[in-house]
Amino acid sequence: MSSRQFLVVLAHGAGVERVAVEFESHPSNVGEARHFVRQRLVGWRLGEDYALMDRVVLVVSELVTNAVVHGRTRPSGEKETVGVALAFKKDFALGLMVTDNSTSVPTVKVRASAGAIQGRGLALVTAESDSWTAAPRQERDGCRGKAVWAFFLCPVVLPDLVPQPA
Image (cartoon, rainbow, N blue to C red; front, side):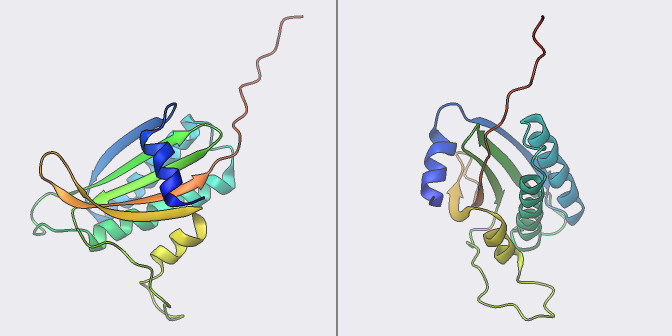
């Protein structure tokens, strides 16, 4: 499935649950972003699929780290935020969006050397998500930047089993 198909359903479709938060653009908040995502996945009963949980948490970690390291546009003394949003349509997909103020759209490095400590983040996003895309954004308040989306096909979520009276 293409990123465009995921976006059409998750950004504009009916029956989609959405949640968003902003964190200060600081390396210490990458863990807060992971915690936020874990808690929301558990709330949507997706936390029971450990493989999916691990994939999504790894991807949010990489995308928020990239936003903190490469997406900062204000001087270091000024506050700047990174946005994290989730969109979930039951029995279809989960979308993860990370926003920052940089207009530079990320690209996957062709090949990172074996000893490189940078340059592998988007390769991991490519490997762990079912699709991803990035695009410039402009908010109503004039703020500019980019949004990076990663998409994950979701298994069918089983309803809670409630014992029936005999």
